[in-house]
Length: 228
Length: 228
Image 1 (tube, each protein chain N blue to C red):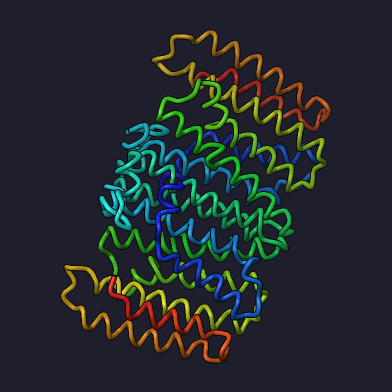
Image 2 (cartoon, rainbow over the protein chains, first blue to last red):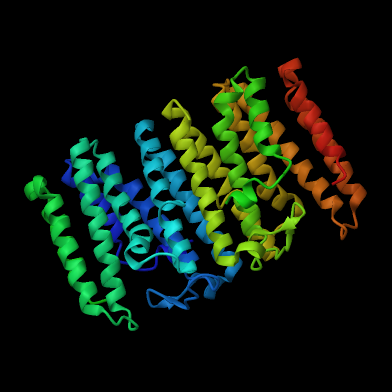
């Protein structure tokens, strides 16, 4: 669990949680357990996606994948335990309990059969188009990361809707850029243009926050420009 | 998810949840979402344990295992999604939210690295003795099943402690009987005797409930006598 979780990553999802909380006038420290839970869920999904029965990857973030180091059974368990720990942290560390239950519901829906896991299912079965898979595999959890930060800040329904819209588009753009960086991509420019349009829309979605959202805007811009 | 979840099983864990709620004067209907969550967690663990990288089983409850029917990647995802759905149900369907958060915490601790998943880890690595593995792999979730039923019934701390003690011993006895039914078992009689003693203690643990616990007592006795 530690090997994969503490491996240096971009930490975009927990960062979005903290920034969303901050944009809604909330306390970043209060959002920290949720941010940790979101990263645990992300890393759980990476460990399982890298397995031979899924994408069969030997390297992740420049290091051998979890199952290469510890074995397949162990990697399945490490992923399972990170997913479980994410929900334990929400239950134990988010107060009031209303917020804990609400966070768990939002997170579970982003992960489950209608979210990330459904997207991965379609991906390995070759069932859906790129954008539908990207939406569920990547954008659902990124949208939830923003949504969850807003919940911990006791945001208004309008603020939550705006941050969800932002998160969804940033998530889609993020995945499209990822796809465009794949050596096998043959429609690089189309993907980058789509990502650019989505990022513009995402920035528009949070325009009502004014300067409180300046870091969120900056982050969206940077993610679209990245080359790795 | 449906293939494995709706496959006929003994449903001992959800049954214990409902009976524990009933013994504490609670409403079985109110405990139903928790009972479902507990069975989902159990089935998730069966799907993953049956995988080639774990116990490599072809049959479960007389039918082909999940990965034999749908493939390994799909079985990993189905298990992940059942685990996720269990926590979604607790968050969405248990009220008040205090009870939802408490249930999620109890369930996560029974499943995680210090519970079921830790037991399975030791099992595949051959690290611990039978009773230590049985405790975490099996008894932790069975104890939690009783504990969770009691929470939905707003049980007193004394009632919860008694039902936890009962569930832990019933869980250990259950696993020992399972082990004794294994064709490869060479210490059948010792295992059965140990299970018998644990069941007697379990029945003693809930003596203060009087006739309200009569079905729990009957169930413990039957589980010890089973031959399949």
